[in-house]
Image (cartoon, rainbow, N blue to C red; front, top):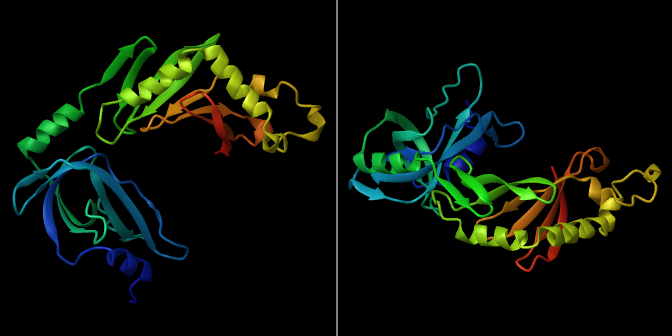
Length: 262
């Protein structure tokens, strides 16, 4: 049977040498997605938090990706991990991105005291409580999640951190800046939404002059990335095709951009 070209292209990214390692794997891989139209192969993967080189017994405290391309069908024998844990993996290294590895074979669960210590620390709950509220780290998504008082209601907050990190000092500083004068922050963002002509094209012509539609959007979700960049997400609902209206806000609480997402 002729070999699928998509598989050949994928495997061609990796060095020929097959190596063995013990990996602290973040989660199972899932079914993945089709690599291209008409291909019988799917590409899936997961992240690792640290690994041990079986050849040198050296611990590497680095994050990276483990990827697998597999063939679908009735007799498919797709490999996977049970979830968070330590696994013995046979792999090949990406020629241009050394932290990216192709899975050759998953040999099963493994034990290593160094990786076990990292795993133990990783599974401990991390909670930050400050003047803004209480925020808990969601390890699956590398983000602190919480809620803050927002004018007459509450707003959800998501603070993205670097993979494997618990440090969110920059992100909390950005949130504090926005919360310094929430009334002014909210008014600035809603005025920016109301003045965006592109959004008006989404509103039906029979909705009149659309005055005040920005006040009907409810409280935003505030999302801050690992560099401290803030976005205010408003659910637009039916008038905006069930998209979210996302406003980017800089460190001076000045709106710098707007998008429809979803």
